[in-house]
Image (cartoon, rainbow, N blue to C red):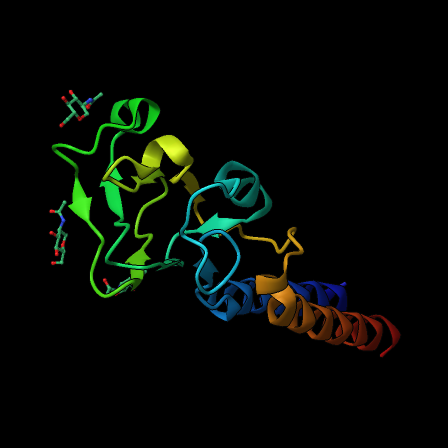
Length: 165
Ligand SMILES: *[C@@H]1O[C@H](CO)[C@@H](O)[C@H](O)[C@H]1NC(C)=O
Ligand SMILES: *[C@@H]1O[C@H](CO)[C@@H](O)[C@H](O)[C@H]1NC(C)=O
Ligand SMILES: *[C@@H]1O[C@H](CO)[C@@H](O)[C@H](O)[C@H]1NC(C)=O
């Protein structure tokens, strides 16, 4: 009976360790808006792009564009819906290879001013908290999933040892 208790305790410690490792293993992902190096441009379906990505707190957006033509402004939903580029929240525009830190679990809205919002240059990004379990399988998660597999193998081995010996 005592033996079983201590085995169970060890198993629980092991599982807590694995959870901690999970959280620490996820690296921030840089999301290239539009999918490429230079794809903050008109006539790209940013809604489709955004729906295919998983954004988590701590990730980054990358906007690659011609700074002489376009810009990147963070706006609120009303301005996003109506393509209003006045009184924006934040001007992301620097040199045309610009990044934005997704620091909160929130929906962020961006558009290009100078009329290009009307040609489709706007994107909404829904950012979530990092999940406790790696349920998602997009390319940003590959190393994460790999580590998960190793940890599962370790857990299985540990379980076998605890049960057998
Ligand atoms: C970006 O966000 C991460 C996660 O919230 C934070 O740790 C980091 O300090 C931020 N970096 C900058 C430059 O704001
Ligand atoms: C969005 O921003 C515009 C421009 O600053 C402002 O007039 C409007 O009240 C804001 N809407 C909301 C819902 O915050
Ligand atoms: C945004 O910032 C860039 C670089 O500082 C500047 O050239 C540009 O005029 C700004 N755009 C707006 C709309 O304020």
